[in-house]
Length: 132
Image: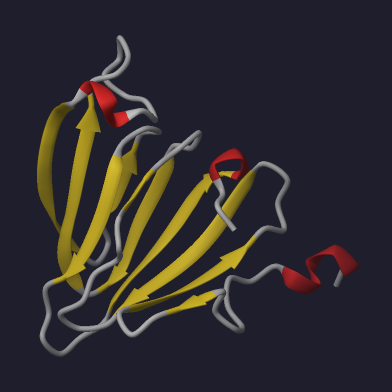
């Protein structure tokens, strides 16, 4: 196998671990980052605003809710400065197999609704929006 593919998996030791969730990230590729998040039963991510990055979420297992806030600070309704107010706020049910597209500038929080099972999702996003 080629040497550059020694680190081609999203796995190994997680880059971030809390009591609520763990995140594994791989930055091998030049243009996109891939990560995996596992949320414990009844817990959630802290939530964050996507800056300089569109994100594809792929729900691998579990069920939950994705809370999304769209800010009104550009002609398109998206952007990184929330000072102009909320344009739209909603939540969406998540189940295994769902693929969710979220635009740069939106705020996202994922909640695991299960009392027993973990919720796992993969993210693929622009390198420019990566916060290490």
